Image 1 (cartoon, rainbow, N blue to C red):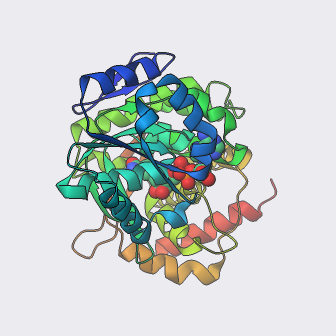
Image 2 (cartoon, helix red, strand yellow; image 1 turned 60 degrees about the vertical axis):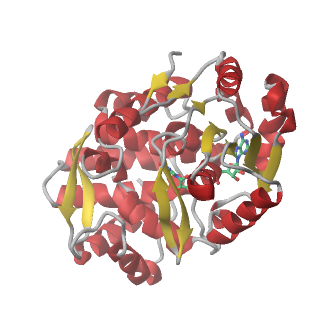
Length: 357
Ligand SMILES: NC(=O)c1ccc[n+]([C@@H]2O[C@H](COP(=O)([O-])OP(=O)(O)OC[C@H]3O[C@@H](n4cnc5c(N)ncnc54)[C@H](O)[C@@H]3O)[C@@H](O)[C@H]2O)c1
């Protein structure tokens, strides 16, 4: 598979990925390497990395607890302290080995440490390979809001080793598939048709590559998300709010799972705003129902979800702005949606979950 060229860096795929990493480390001279990982990515992925990349034997390893609840300012502060204690200078390279939590937070940590040091991403989950490790959005959750503190800073390179997916749980694999399906819904009808009839995800490598290609087109056109890149937020206005409200509860959802809730609800809104047909809505809902285990969102959370949506990063001048589908494979940005329609969309989502057909 050919490397994909992004803004000033490449996303490497395929069997030569470690060769590319070695040549990157030879070409670019760094004073120190810091590998940020979580317990699972360390356990499942570090040995293969080290076996194939001897230069990293001298790397300092910083391991965090797995999961979204680590993606916060406290963890960042601990990591910055460790980097200071270990004399990380401005010529340090941060290597994010992990899922989206590690790449979002590690990228943020690097982007502001001593006014910015280089970082690379070695994604280890499907979600981070397909989406989080590419495009330069870094950040952490704060005040119960998702990704509200962060920067847009591009990595120096991304190395996708698809072998890492072999240890991923089925739940985490589906979690990643959700973001690829989103990419298909907003920009590639052919990919959508193919994926929706391949629930076993047999061709995941091919879907993944296509998804990165598609994402990269948006990122190159609009790196700072002022315009067309907003399309990638389809499903995320409601999805992020649902994810944040349920974080730390027994009903906590993974990011992709929350985005599925958001995509069903926001497809309903797209239909209500006459942007897509009833057939499109039914097709989307039946794909998600057949592929994922959906859980209801308890109405007791609706008010909190609404309040979080009011704080969404995409809003402007006090107006709640959504990215909605205007047919399968295409998206309309900056759509005003009244709160009452958000509530109806969550009720619709719950009716889909409870409908046994
Ligand atoms: N920056 C972006 O553009 C962007 C895009 C989408 C999502 N995100 C962010 O990404 C995060 C979600 O990413 P995620 O789903 O990768 O979550 P994650 O990083 O929490 O990883 C999911 C789980 O998989 C484990 N894991 C990682 N690699 C593994 C491996 N190879 N084998 C076994 N287990 C492994 C992790 O320890 C964790 O338990 C969210 O915080 C979301 O906001 C960012």
